[in-house]
Length: 397
Image (cartoon, rainbow, N blue to C red; front, side):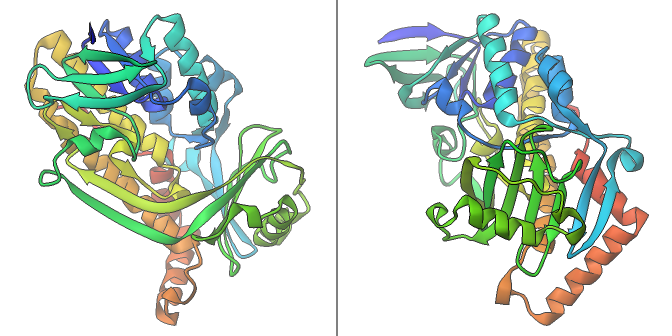
């Protein structure tokens, strides 16, 4: 078995793991990344495209923001359509902040290239990854690559390996508590090289179900419609998708829809999942390894970024100031922001989707009243805007 040593071992080479490694590298802190699939496979995951300013600032701090700031689109507003009535939420006017539309694939590619240029070590296509002795001062990870066994000694382990990864499973069942809410629908998404239907995103609530008009650029659109959770992607031709999507857009926007062949089509399940705590000894859960939210509030990648921010601050203090006690702050700080994001995502999901017979007439009327207040009141629009652009990152004590 070949033995290697680093300061921080990072399991997972998605955006969370890459961003953490780049930020640590800037502080002179060594890290090694382990990833079970190829880099090409990681880049094949079509995910989020709306970045909060907190995420954008971290990317700038890591010195990988050139493409994001050059190609990414700054959005100062977002629209909500209830039937044919459209309401614009002026994000910048209400909060002083905006969001950036820049695809997760693009930001991941930028960080991959930066990692290679800066010589941060990474092992792809590894198997049998297993953390050991995470409660001790000398944790380590064993893994296999190309039939060769490795032992990676480290001080700390960042579990950025997603919901199905090994990191969360390392925390004993009697130590962790898991919360989950599964929704009876998913999002059928289609990406096409067509101009977006609208300059801003449109979140649409209709009797036929929810729809979202998003984009990746001026020439690439990303659209979603709510479908039953057991729906099969094979049952949805491009033609059927476009027909249904158009019916769910407000009438005043339909003539702007330009259709074309899909370049990607998939169904995303809709659920919330939170694990507590997010730390066990010297192991820290980051991003999807510890929490998942419905995509409605555009919070998944952005909550992962706030995890990275907190862990980055902690590890910097540990290595720069020798303060090891601060690591106990990770889970409480991260979870406070996560639960805010979970609540916002749940709230939007609950209000904008069609639950069929699961909600009685009284509930439907209450939701209609709630939407009317929040969209027609400046105070209500500000509540939405503050959470949509992202709550501030909490500092260490």
